[in-house]
Length: 223
Image 1 (cartoon, rainbow, N blue to C red):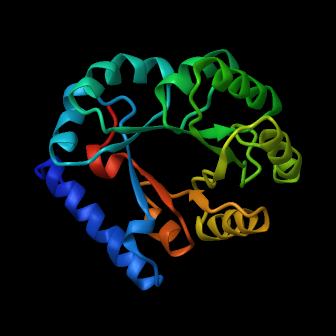
Image 2: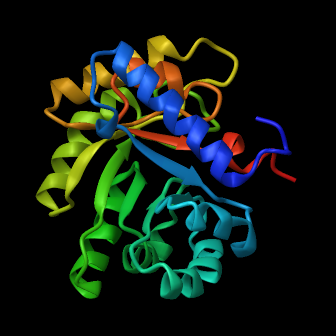
């Protein structure tokens, strides 16, 4: 993707790539949702994708998303927002109010904070449990061994758990980690898999991703 390409060009190219990989995998392209990761991108930088017809976006931070999307959503009310970054428990109410899906549920305290926020706000975003699939100390996500207990707690707390999310180790082949996440989702009867980013979303689609999180390939390198 060169800088000379327009947002619409990039969007078309990525949608074509998604459709191609889904077809190879024997899947319907409509089973894969493209989440445009707009973290650090200004509202003005997001508008070209909105004008090109895209409506599903992801942000990493609650405060940044609030600043950008309050006005944008007045102009584009059908936007669907996903929180893909780590969430502090004290921001749970703001996140529930703003986002349509939360991908980073990874600990008991956050489960309880989100449950309380849903009751207070009166809104129930889809929730993904984030799994630390590569057992990396610096990354969020629950340990694989802790997944059964956290999943049970989240369901009992009333969270609408729809799937799993993971970010594989950056310097290793992603496919085995995607395959493991897909197996875990199947084991726990979860239909959706949030996995795959700009560098590996094609592999993720081949291994069952239902949500791919693409930023750089759409917006260019972060400043």
